Length: 211
Image (cartoon, rainbow, N blue to C red; front, side):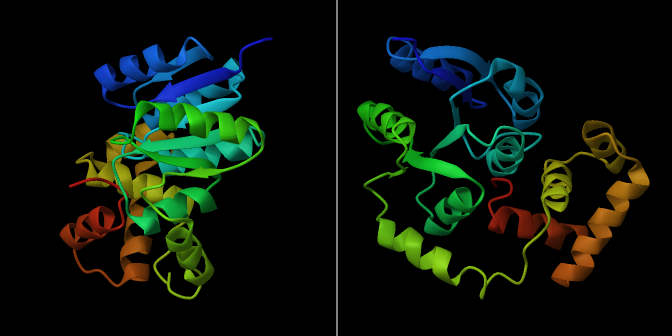
């Protein structure tokens, strides 16, 4: 039987190598990436069945990258492998197209089990986080999420929060610096924030970047 094709994405090189070693006997590891932008650039031509990705990656975080990948590759299964047990973050991952959510401190066999589940058409949430926790959040998200940003705004905010200048953000996203400035100040007005520092604090609080 032909092995299922899997892409791995994590900014920790040693961990990425360990995951590859764990999975390669059962799956065909067709690509490994260290940030969200390179994942977006290279995933489609590799034709993966599953993408195992971290949330906290540089340039474009895993949630934003995953949302774009599901638009480009609607049949691909997204398996998030992360340190976070935050149910809000897990629920956001599922809203953006995740099929599984696994924490990094779980047993190695849990990742393999999660991948098998999604390939069989199911979904998987680490036992350390109950489905009730995630389900409850999903039901109430629309009512209590007035600060929702667009995908492009999230991308701009992450790069700014990583310390990049507007010109650098413009080059990475292939837009003009004026467009970046427009998104920045639109976000500040929408979120009712007065300074760039408050905007960065919002990015950290929202898990768009890690502190």
